[in-house]
Image (tube, rainbow, N blue to C red; front, side, top):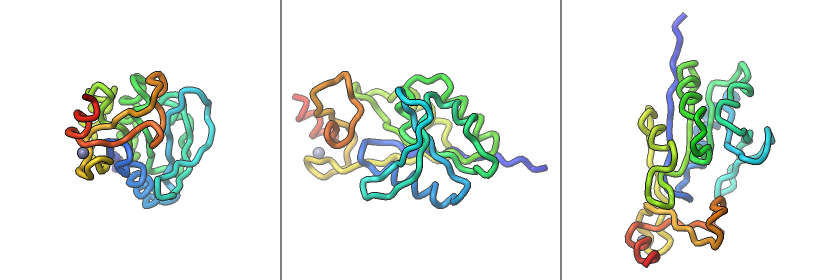
Length: 182
Ligand SMILES: [Zn+2]
């Protein structure tokens, strides 16, 4: 038997850049064989819906660590989405899980933020980028000047809780970001 190896695709970049939209497009294209996971630090396996800003939906299963995916695979699955992989932070099972799934023949499609608030690689995301067969950087528009954004600006008040959407974050180009910071 000719064992097929899967491919890893990464959509990464700023927030509001359309990463989830691209992920859901790919998963819908894979049809019945697609399943999607995302990290949750406080819940066990709860079933949710992932939704893009323009309202497209896809069911997503929240998991505590990346290797939980192996417990939830069913025989018809061909394509595995991992949404917000950056929020697995330093989960040591993340990279081995991606590699093992790929080598088992699954296509793995991943989204995540590229850099943290210190403008450094966000946890393990640069490692995923290096191993990905397809690595697509997506950029939102700078909310201030409309040029392509590179930075996520945190406008929330409580830095101990960074998780949020447009209520807490704005995509900015590097020039507008530096201006805002000063
Ligand atoms: Zn700008």
